[in-house]
Length: 332
Image (cartoon, rainbow, N blue to C red; front, top):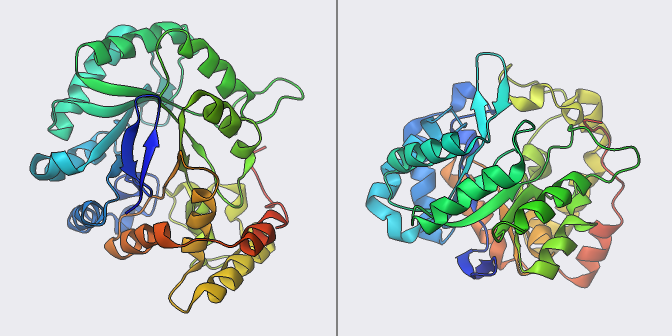
């Protein structure tokens, strides 16, 4: 697989990563099977999709434990990205950016992952009660201690409060400007896909100008852009899509023209090419430091996603995708 570099320290990863969250958290709980997920992770490493993206809150903790079972055998083949800063309670999620907590959380992640070092340690969310510089400073100490190789930041969520008239990623860029003064940012993780292109407007240009990598989360639109979901199909109560406004029956039907365009372009490239691969190829085409991290728990989708790295969209394809109607339904 093509290799891409992220961050000023030129961290090398496969062009397509693997988002591990669906294996343990937020999607179809009844279909989460450990053995199947282990096969998916092994398959990703076999294909060169070496960036494994997880977080201590996924499960919580069980996703890191699952990856640890693979890493104890294949650590040298993997690029491990995990996150800190969110605590999961019975009915809520809260941020914790206290330096002491960050240090303890890192040690716990290292134990669960069965590794001596985390390649990319990301701040999941800033704690509103702690200056982000203090949290980032504690994370920087972990780099100096040899427990972490590089630091990253997850973008502020779409539902977070914004100033009147502010653009989607303004709050994230303000955080980035602050933490960059403390220790270099190597990567930013933010949603980027054909139906959520907002990162292209301000966030990606900020990253490009500073040599910061962009990890494209949800590049397949939580599964919608694969074309395998049926409007009105319903989702399990724990599935985040059960509460997402774009996944109501009405909005799934309204956004079908986006999937139709992906299928149309896929057909031009051959019978074996899928809508999902076109969606990933579009993300890859946004720049050499952009790495899509599609989430899945199934080996067959890992294989299909990895193969998207070989697909080259034409100028005609990109122009067609650039004129798609905006997706309907949002958190705002």
